[in-house]
Each structure stands twice: as structure tokens, then as C-alpha cells.
Amino acid sequence: MGQYDIMTIEPLVLVPPMLCDARAFGPQIEALSPEFPVMFAPTTQGERMEEVASQILGWAPAKFALAGMSMGGAVALEILRRAPERVTRIALISASALSDTPEQASAREPLIVAARSGRFNDVIAQEMNPDWLAPGPSRAPITTLVTDMAYANGSEAYVRQARATQRRRDQQSTLRKVTCPAVVVCGQEDTFLPVKRHEFMAEMIPYAKLEVIAGAGHLPTLEDPVATTIVLHDWMRQPLMLR
Image 1 (tube, one colour):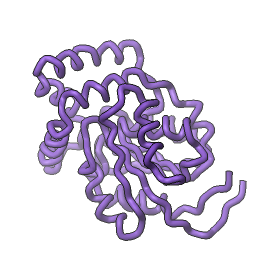
Image 2 (image 1 turned 180 degrees about the vertical axis):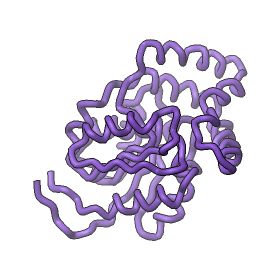
Image 3 (image 1 turned 45 degrees about the horizontal axis):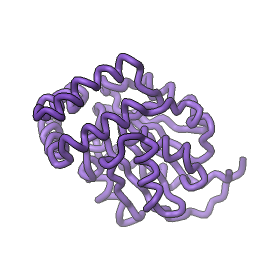
Image 4 (image 1 turned 90 degrees about the vertical axis):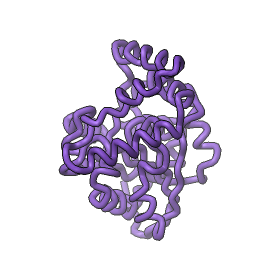
């Protein structure tokens, strides 16, 4: 497999976690925009990952770099599965390639019922668990920001996202077929998706690089924005591999 050294300036498409908006990538958008075209891809309108991926592919450039965080990583993998020829490089942040187990899928049902019956506060408390963030002074303001994003998206969007997550397919075979520059990013203190899960995922991707952000939990883009931005910048500047 060869490489070429000419650096291209590709559009970067960012896909957020569940119930989050562009503010989940706020520091990266600000830091990377002077050098790269950066686009944000909302995930609030589809009840299946396939539908969300199709919507994004409908407006995305012909070729683009793709970064997804948490649920956004699952969307990114579905985009990659459907249109690998359009994705020039991929970053998976705090993500998993596995489908829901039957137990996990069943556990989403009470939350969906709560969201539909006016108890969205309870849903947010469980889906935006502060304990998934690293302890420290940034935990409270990040929790507040994430809660604000959740309310901005609303309960109906949550139900669609929960259904899409509940029904998502196993993407391990997609990982094994990756031929573009890939990076797997996680927080060292992520208790929701621990480092070992990310190590396993990175090992499945040919030539992937694993980046562990010290002192960060499940949302490294906000918990250590400088370190995460450096990782993404370096990834965007990797020479493209020929398919």
C-alpha cells in the first residue's frame, strides 16, 4: 500500500454524541477552522443509523474526513460502511463498534417511555451521567453545558436517537476494512467506555493509531480540548493512503 506526500485540505465532518450539538466540538471547530473547512452533522432526525448516515451523505462533500464521538462514532461507522470511497480518513472518539446487547436494548425502553411522558429530566440524568467525566473542576461546567445541549435538542430527538442506537448494527467487519488514516481517541478516565474497549477497536483497524487523553473521561473534546485538538490536527495532516 503506497502513500503520497501531497497534503490535501479536506472538509472535516464532525458527528456529535447523543443529545449534543456543535458545542460538543466547540474548541476544535474554533481551532481547526482557520486551516480546514469544518462542518457539523446533526443526528436528530432519523430512527435508524442507516437513515442518519444517508441524510449526512446527502449533503456532505464528495470526499471528506470524518470524526464521530460516542453515538456520533456509531453514525460515522455506518457512513464508512455505506460509502467508504467518500471517507478520506476517520477518527472515532469515545466510540464503540459493537451493537447493543439484548440487555442494553431493553434498558433503553424505560428511558424512551420517560422521554415521551414528560420526564425528560430523568432521561438527561441517566444519559448525561457526570461520573462518565473525569473528576475535577471542569466536571460541573461541562455537565451544565451538556445538559443545555440536551434541552436544546429536546425529548423527541432523544427518542429518535435512542431508537437508532438501540437498533445499530455490529460494525467490527467495517473496522477491518478501513484503508484510510484512522485514529481512535479516548479519555484515560472514561468509565463508560474504558480504554481497553478502545484498544480492542484500534487493534481491529489496519494501521490505526490509539490516542489516550490523560485526565479526560467520556468527552475529551471538552475535558482536554487542547490535547484532543492536537490529536485531530495531526490526524488531518497524515498523508492519505492510496486505496
